[in-house]
Length: 113
Image 1 (cartoon, helix red, strand yellow):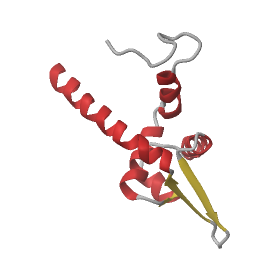
Image 2: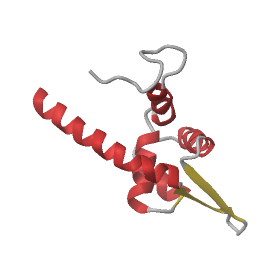
Image 3: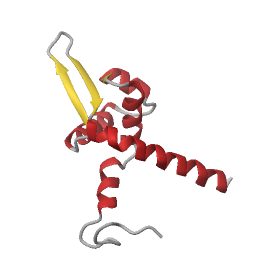
Image 4: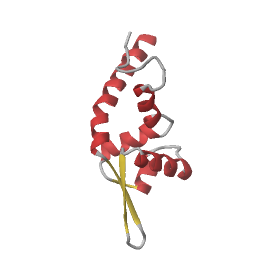
């Protein structure tokens, strides 16, 4: 059994719950993975890369990821306006953890099959 480093299970504050809240949801992980794979990416390229995402959900997810410090949004005042997104150093630290989680997911899936 894994124990949380602070007041847990699920007392006032759960750091694991906080982390999952930041990266949770249907679209945040695909966005982070696309940015990790491709590096700095323009909005329309990101939209094309993530199948099924609507403009509303992409904008909303990007805004939340930016507010949580995982991505940086850069807008260039050109015509037409160019917007690019890139991962922050905080998110770069998260990527090896997500890779380990993905490897664990493969093991679990293989056992279920």
